[in-house]
Amino acid sequence: MDIGARLKNLRTAKKVTIKALAEITGLSVGFISNIERNVNNPTINSLMKICEALEVDLQTFFSLPNTDSVVMRKKDRQPLHPLEQPTIVWMHAKNSNHLQPSFITMEPGAEYGDSPSGHEDEEICYIIRGRVEFLLGGESYLLEEGDCIYIHSFVSHSITNIGEEAAVTYWVTQRKR
Image (cartoon, rainbow, N blue to C red):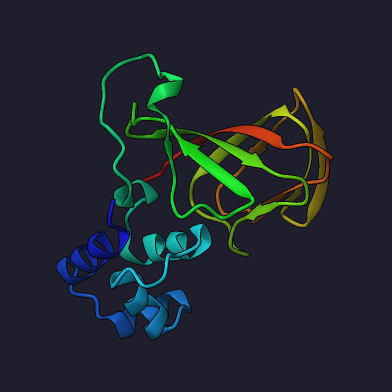
């Protein structure tokens, strides 16, 4: 999968200059240029800003097989790159135009978060293993195995593994686009 080429093709198809994209996202012209040339890999947060600016969803940048199957096999999971170590995100094959399931595995102390304004999608996160702290719209929530949290559209949120072992979470995102 070539994120740089996909970004450049998408950006030029939408007639957006690198400078305009940089202004909208708050990323530098050089950084965006480096992504397009595969010199740099964007973080998930940077890529989400680019997706919002270009009005596409994150899946646009990843080669997820399109299937009509109602079964999602573990072997069909694909890692979402770039991996923000020590956080690993696994996306399942696309089974719906509106729902995107994913797993996030976080090593102790790892953080995974969203921009200050959140995003338009709604999410549910289920804690499979571990202890995490969610910051959700300025409120702190401690969650453990079996707990679940609902995240409204445009509410800022981040998750931190506060436990001593890897935390495994399962997310379902309802995409609005």
